[in-house]
Image 1 (cartoon, rainbow, N blue to C red):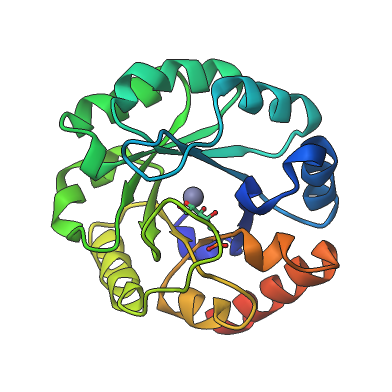
Image 2 (image 1 turned 60 degrees about the vertical axis):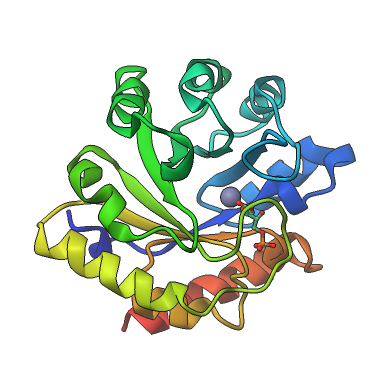
Length: 227
Ligand code: DX5
Ligand code: ZN
């Protein structure tokens, strides 16, 4: 089934959750209609922030049946994908810029029975993933420089989403496009209209009072933008 025939999915990023109440926050977004839980893993080297290790992913796994979409912003990803797979990740995303042997790393994720996702920073050309596109379940386009929640959407991401949509459709592949960074209710429509299938939103969900109302409104705007 081509990805565009599936409804747009919302993946709240727990980076913007209240970590002191993480279990309750995950349960709240699940009850509010989230489709995935987006988990931002940062190592203080590849990105200038430090966040979530496998033990936290394991704890999140215990409180939800939603797919865990684990975004690894780390160097030496090959060394860690096994630990995150065992911790309960469903999708594992690795950055092109951090994986010199990207094809092998993607193969490693698939061989662990997980869905491989490849991630590109805002400046990284799509050409970098041409030859692995048939091997991934999803491509994540960063629309901010990774490291922090709450940043502004980088406008050039829209043209990049459109170009990736064309690449995927021209090749007849079933690969989702996920967009991460600065997406909120006010701009989700244009991001979806450009071709996104999965929307990550951290502050755009956790920064609002009523998660269910926010996610429902995001899905309504996404459906309208799909036409
Ligand atoms: C940034 C992370 C994002 C971030 C998104 O490095 O990959 O997932 O949490 O946060 P917002 O939606 O607030 O930009
Ligand atoms: Zn992320």
